[in-house]
Image 1 (tube, one colour):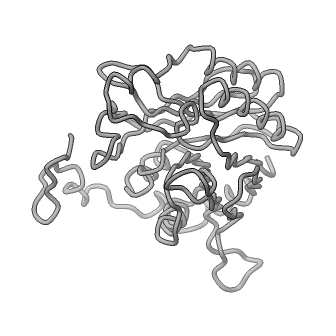
Image 2: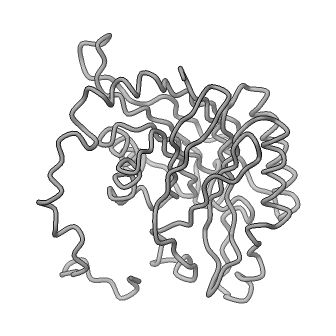
Length: 292
């Protein structure tokens, strides 16, 4: 497998579910025409990351994992012979979830992930948080690759990408909905560097409130025999406008790099990290709205 092309769908959402379904399917077709292996949507595409404060209204906007909206992307993935990573507000008990679903090119659902680190300081406090991270074996027309997923705020916790790396992820897909400024982009750069993984992040464009585009992809290859000094791991950074941005990951180079370099799980000492699983929180980090 020489490369993997991920289409970052930096799209402005429509005003309703039907519009987002229609536009989403249209842009998956365009992604296929551009040679993509995976089409990736920004966070909670079914509602354009619009989260009502009112609980009953929130539940009314949620859709089932086997709804027509979700299943339509699986059917199109099979028709186009392309993987689709789509996002939605999932109907769930006791409250909806912020969910990512990856369909392979045969239309099979190979990965379902609910956002673990919900933004409990904001309206996401009303969502049900996920409880684990998952990695799937994805069969593409270019070959097989291990794919993981995290969503937006997850990237701010090194543990998210670390667990995915430990579970074998080679590429991590990151649906997003927030202002992507230098510090948030730097977090993604760090996650790719320290885990020797590729990371593809897609955001909403400027014009969507509290978003500004700047979708990115990093290959995690900090050093190369062809370049005597350290290299930029950035593959692509989009501007603010709506569009499809293709991130072309050099998979074979990433795999060779992971076999040789010192990051990832090569020289860790897990037995010395016991404090990391402690649930004790001391000042100045105590927050009244924290949920376990």
